[in-house]
Image: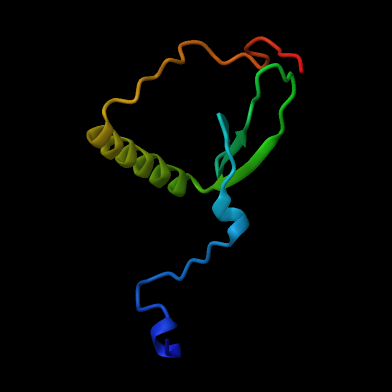
Length: 105
């Protein structure tokens, strides 16, 4: 491949995704806070029987990007439901931090 064909074309962004980031991080809880200038989204993985969890990832967005993310998520959920059926929201009350029974090994 020539150097010319590797260069992004006008209006395109060249985005690199390394292996570690590509694996992703599982989250089953998002905590969202905001100030006048930014939105902070903390992603947490809460495990049954564990009373303490750590933030696995924090994303900080401008209010404009937060609104774009909201729209993009809404569009993607709509397309997903059109292809696979309605996503049911079983969560009626806030998830307790120590949900479920504890097991023994």
